[in-house]
Image 1 (cartoon, rainbow, N blue to C red):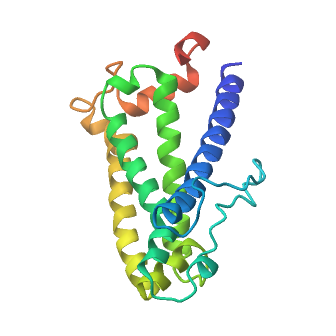
Image 2 (tube, one colour; image 1 turned 120 degrees about the vertical axis):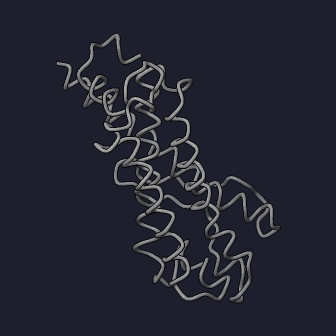
Image 3 (cartoon, rainbow, N blue to C red; image 1 turned 180 degrees about the vertical axis):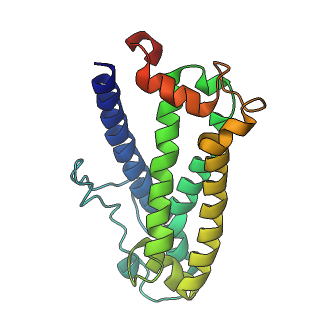
Length: 205
C-alpha cells in the first residue's frame, strides 16, 4: 500500500512539474521576445499534449521574427529558457541543502524531482541539440554566429558540476558526509528519500 501510494504521488508530482516547467520554458521565449520588442503580447503559450509532452510552443519563430542571422536577440530569445532552467536547478539544489524548505518530506521530494527534471531538459538541449539547425540551440548558435562547440563545451562543464554536486549531496557518496550535511529532520538526504518512499501516509506532509 505504501509503495502504491508513493508511486501515485511520484507520477502526479512528475507530470505537474513537467507541465509547469514546459509552460515556464515557453513563456520565457515569448516574454523575452516581447521585452526586446519583437512581439506585442508576452507569455503566449500554445498548449500541447500533457502526456506525450508534444506540440507545446511559445509562438516565437525566431527565423520569422528576426529575418537575418547573426542578431544577438535571436540567441537571447532562443536560449533564455535554458539559462532560467539552469538557474532554477542550482537554486533548488541550494534549497535542498538547508532545513527551511525540507522539513516536510513532500516538499523535499517535490524540490528533488524539480531538480532532476530540469537537469534532464538541460542534458537534452546541451548534449544532444547543439548541432541542430533549428530550435533553441540552433537559434543561440545562429544569433551569435557560433559553431555548436561553445554551447556544447560550456554546457557540459555546467552539467558536470551539477552532476558532481548532485552525487555528493544526494548519492551514495553523501553517506560519508552525513555528519556535516543535514536537512530539516536531521537525517541525510538519501535517508529522507527512503523515509518518504517507505513512510506512513502522515509522514508525507
